[in-house]
Length: 313
Image (cartoon, rainbow, N blue to C red; front, side, top):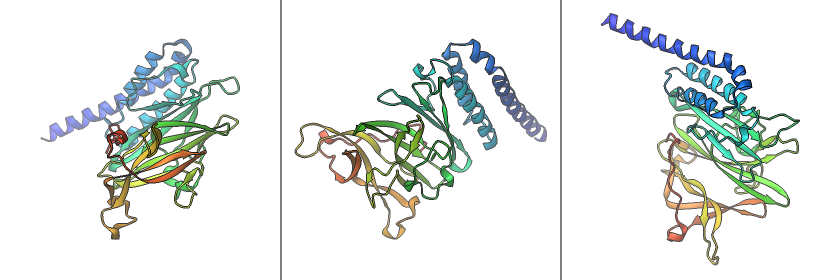
């Protein structure tokens, strides 16, 4: 029995060192391949192999180390000429959202860690080079340090780490407003759904969060719904036909979340969707206006489907 345990430990140690050796060699030889290799498919395949290691490695430090290698490699590939036009479709665990006006794309992903915790990474990539160079702006997750992210605008170095799954574009008064829908998990008990405005400065830099919500005290820079990790929450940009209108309007529809008992109010690990009760945000004159009690019983006012993987709920 002892001999079997020792053999298993040896095999595990060997595989861990083999993974890091291969990953290290990949990064050592990367500069040469970036210069000489213009076939993005080869780089995509290498990135895919790295990303598939995230859930396989047992220790958090190993997963973080491989994620660092993946992030560095991906950034170098994104800096290659022509990368913006390449879709990287096989990276199925990575969210790559191109803005509807094709001026930028935002890339985000997470690495699952022990205890239902997660590490978030991302990039902002403009379509046009800045200062004559292909620009890739890393997003640095500081979400766990933000006491009240709902009331702050954040730059790329203060990013509230989020896995984004939808990107909405509106233009109002000759200004562009983008809205991101996303998911975040940062503890074992709760999950979060996020509605986050995104604006671009004159220098081409992303700014996350803006007070454009008519909701509560109208000071929200982003909407953060927190709820039990045991349930899922609908939040989606979808068509809806309001009374008196013949044409559908695109709105953000979401479950109304509430505590299972009134005395548990504020304890978000007990928040679940209220049965068949939906609210929404409508985009009106450059602002997201809260609208309660959306009736989706009419087939023309269908509810959006429940979330699908990679949401780990």
